Length: 283
Image (cartoon, rainbow, N blue to C red; front, side):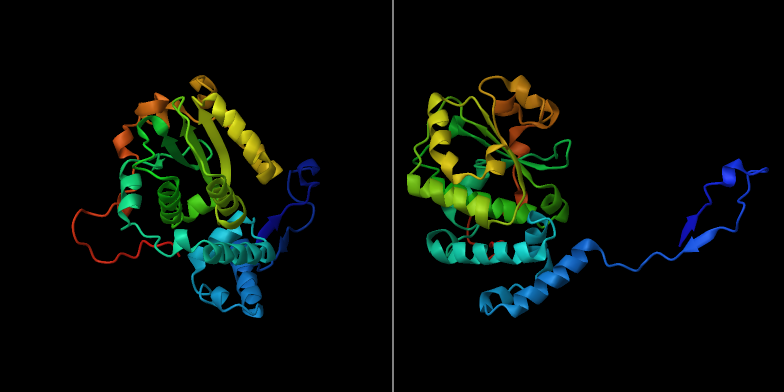
């Protein structure tokens, strides 16, 4: 019930309402997320797509699409369709996508990428990649992409992460990394147009000149909103700290206060030796 005062009351002789207070019934409305989820499921049922129906009861998974598309049910279903289509087009990524993949494990254990224990001032989850110890012979772009997908999938079990989104930090250490144009297009297409997550910002530090060339190459594939989220800092870490507090950054590469060995998603680390098949596969 809402108690509504007469605005003339404060001018009355004794400060009492001149008329009896009016009680208004608050309309019974469903929470926006619940309403959007119901509408999304209805739309999924109306599509002639068996793959969609497989995810009908997985509310946590579906909510990732809703948060990404700001509770627009129609747009969320469209994103889900694109995601499923992307999986079919790229079996080399998804058929064997598992934390038990030894190359993926190597990436996760060595923080390619890593995740900060604390969120930024906007509550966003911060992922980082430092190329100081990167070797193309040990960490392929495909393995790092798989590790990234599994890491984000695990983190988004928390609905707060779904809502607040991700921030990426990349320390190039003046290194150059060869990227196959086809792989680069796949990565951009997958994350920008198909994957259910909110990407809020990408920060580059210590980038070589080649990165400027790389950004020029990928610019045509980036949406305007995505381009506006890219920040290039060079060696000026002070400008990075204006966006992300130095206190929550790793001590290695970013001169922060957090021990870099704590920046791992423990539940994705598989103990050495024979293990049973885990359920930490991407949905």
